[in-house]
Structures are given as C-alpha cells and as structure tokens.
Length: 640
Ligand code: C2O
Ligand code: CU
Image (cartoon, rainbow, N blue to C red; front, side, top):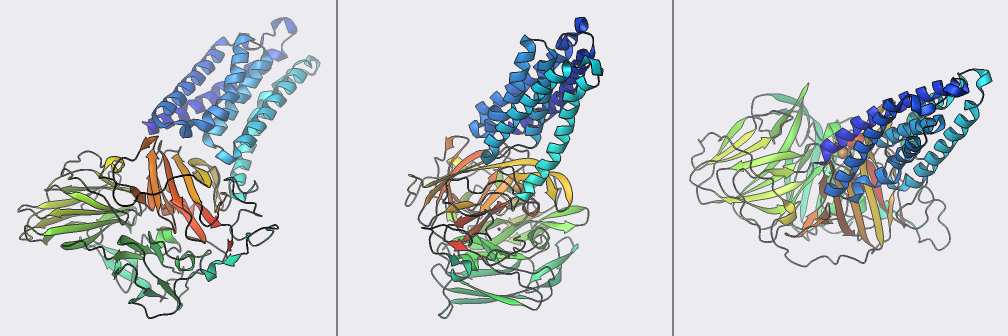
C-alpha cells in the first residue's frame, strides 16, 4: 500500500514544482505591467487551480498514509513538507495578489525539496525555521521589487528566479550537509558528549562524566583452554556452482560457504583468522551472537582489518543456542558476495537430518546468480521417509528472499537463532520472506513423496532448487506461492517475557532517500535520519538502560536493519502488537511504509554498529553507531 503512495507523491511533487514555477513566472510578468493591468494570480487562475489540485492530491496521499501506516510515516509531511505550500496557497486563493503567487511558488519548491530530501527527526525544527525565513524573504522581496516598475519588469521576476536558484543551491548544500555532519550531536536525550563521531568520544567529556574505557579492554576470556578451536584462512579461490559455472571467489579454508563452525552454549570458542592474500583485508563478525565488543570484528571500530599475511584471534563464549553465521566486515559489499561467510551453529538439540541452506547471490558479471549455497540448478538429495529434517535457512545476500517449501506441511522452529514457542504447521508453499542477514530454522517430517525448496526472487531469475526424496531421485516440483508467513502472529509466547518499559532512552530512526555525495559522485541515495555516515547521530546509552526505538521506512526500498551486540525484541508493526511467539531478532527487514517499535537492554558495553545489512546501502552510508557513554575506540577508517 505505502509504496504506490510514495511513488504517487514523488510524481505529484514534481508536477507541483513545475506549476509552482509557472505561477511565479506569471506573477512576475503581471507585476511588470502598469498598475491597471496588474492582477497577479488573477491572470492565471488555471495554473493556480492546477496547483491547488495537486496540493489537495498530496494532502490526500498523506492522509491515506497516515491511515494505513501511522504517524511515523507522515510526521515530516504534516509538520514541514505540506504546510510550506498549503499556507501560501490558501493565501493566494483568497487574495489573488502577485505577492501571494510568488510565495506559493516558493512554497511549492520547498515542498518538492523536502519530499526528495526529507529532514531527519532531529532536523525538523531547523527545516521549519529555514522554510519560514525563505517564505518571509520571498514576501519581502516581491513587495519591494513589485513596486519598482521604473526599473522595468525584470526585477519583478526576481523572487521566483531566485527561488529556483536557491533550490538548486539547497539541493547541492543538502548533499554536503548529509555527509559533512556539521549539525549537532546527541538527539536521543543522551548525556552530553563532544562530537557524535565515535572516534571523538574521548575528548571533552565534562565533570561527572564516567571514566572512559577502550574497546580493547572489552574482550572475551583471554585465559583458559578453549573447548572448540578453529582456524579460518581467507584466500582467493574458485567456487564451482552446481550448474558448472565458476565464480572468481574469496574462500575460507578453500571453500565458500566456509566451514560450518559447531560450538556449544557456555563453552569457550577460539577462532584464529588468517588472511593469506586478500588485499582488501578481512575480519570476522559473528552475526547475531552478542560477543564482547572487542571480538565483534568491525574494522575501524573494534580492530584493524587483517591484511595479507596477518592473523587475529577471536575468543568468546556464546550465550544462546541457535543458527548464526560469520562473515567478513571489511569491504563487505564485495567480499561477502564473493564468498567470505559461513555458518556458526550453537548446538540447540534439534534432531534429525540437518542442512545449512544459504540463500546467496553470487557475482555473475551482468547479473547475479541466485543459489542455495553453491546450488544454482536443481539438486536431488536422499532422505529416508519418516526422518525429521531441519533446514537452517541463512540469507547471506544483500536482498531479502522469498523461500518456498513444497510437498509437506512444515514449521518454522526458530528465527534468527531464537526458538519459536509452539510453532504451528504451515501450508506447503507458504511464502517465507527472509531478511538479508536473517535466519529461519524450518522443520518437517520426511514424507514418502518429494519435498522441494525453491528460491523465488522475481528480480533475479534462477533455477536453484533442492529436491528431497526417499530414494534421492525425484526432480524438484513446481511450487505455487502461498500466503505470506506472518511473524507477528506466529506461535505462542514462551519462556520468560522481556520486561518492557519503563524506558531510559527513546530513539527514532527514519530510513529515507535523499541526495548526497557517495564517494565523489552526487547521487540520490538511502539515508538514516536524513544523513549519511559519519553524519548520522550516534545513539548514546548507559549500561543498564532499557531502550525503545522506532524504525520507519519512508523510502521506496527494503532496509534490513542490523544492530550488533544486542538482541532486539519487536513490540509492534504499524501499531499492531506482536501476538505470537516473542519476536526476537538481530536483523529486522523494514519494508517501505513499515514502522516498527522495538526494545532492547543495553547490557553489552561497547561501540556497536547499527546498519543496513544491504551492504550496498551500508557502503553508501546507511550506518550509525550505538555507543555506551563510557566507551571509546582507538580505531579509525572504514567500518564495513
Ligand atoms: Cu552481518 Cu555489521 O553485519
Ligand atoms: Cu538499506
């Protein structure tokens, strides 16, 4: 629902910018006439009415969005984006003067600007103030210049001409503003802190500030013999897909996906990362496992990337069972796609035949290749009838995937490693929508016939299919896409319930589109709170805080948001509360028009990444940090 509305509004705003221009031009011309013929907007009622109609349509869109998705979706529209044009327009409709027409033209451009470059919640007052100033200046200028008929008509056109010039400048400056981070720092009610860059934190904390500690001090157990010990060696290599295609890949121990690491809850794990020849550098991030900060594998925040010939030792004790995965966090957009990832399973006692099934998009020249691990064609596997089967689905690509399982009823027994309470039976073909970075454990009892798993990505056509049958000879069946799996109502609340409020912090995250410099090119890109990293304000918390956050997607694309080091709980989506099994997650896909309320406990001190797991978006700036007020980091440089 929201996406078509967003698109409609983008088009309407464009039309509004054009009619606004016409309105201003007519008003300028009219003012240049001798007094008797000066009738401002009256000469062009048609343009005025068209403008009014477009604005009315935009209001209707905003009301529809409000009704279907909630207030978070439309805050900026109702507080800034629409008032800037509605107020002058009403004036122009009542008093058809040239001055009112000029002001309406300016309002139309402001409104256009704010739709394409939406201000973050922390920037709303600035945006409102600046708009008021711009409109007041327009009124003043057209009053002043409109009377100078002696100088000819030229000057009278200045208001709308300068309006156009101002818009171009604002767009360019807005882009600079996005990346420069010149605006203020804390906005979540956090304690004062100099600079919002995570690297600036050690400076300027005032009296009463806590004693600072470094990320480097927040390690896992340094002594003791590990219960499980692994070495992962990153190197260039070749991956052969089931269709016979080969990928110029990056591998761990010669394979991709890398070796499965199977460990136990409460037991010490030691992993030595060796980088043989990956020039970009490598780190290991334990996606979904809340390790101590120094073991988190984020270059530029918790360590330096490991260069060719280098090594790094990670030690941690997993505190929850379930399906997790590891991947490099350096140059992740390309390096994870090319193969630097693998499964990390913390023993959870699930019985039967187990498969880790990565949904992955391999680089394939022009197009990407959709696959289950290395299976990009139809593959057959034998499973005796009556056996319990557990498929651990792990999305290692940057896109969300629809995964279909046919031929049997099945259950989703865990989500992002968290067991689901009393999971109900799902119909064959149920549309399992899996966030980039997310995991579902799917379980079923092997029937006599064939069970088929397919990857349905409408964007990336693919032949990937797995067919399970008792004799291992059956071909995969065609599947029909069923109803969407709804996590909101699936299962029953089980185990100890989280405490909820009262909350010590409240944060608002809006995921938007806006103009900005990505590298050296000026593009239309994805933003968090109207900014790109490093200008996105850091979320500051104190150890022990209960934190509530709202995450809203106001743009036209999915954003799988991943907070490191903490398990989050979803409370509601677009105002609708979770009624099924407690929705614990580490990677939450926020689709266009969705607004989630989540909470978590600040119980793992450090400086943590909070970013979009579409690595392409992260690369272009969708990264922010969650920082504890007493932790600082000595590391610098790119974090992904
Ligand atoms: Cu799985 Cu910061 O990433
Ligand atoms: Cu994104």
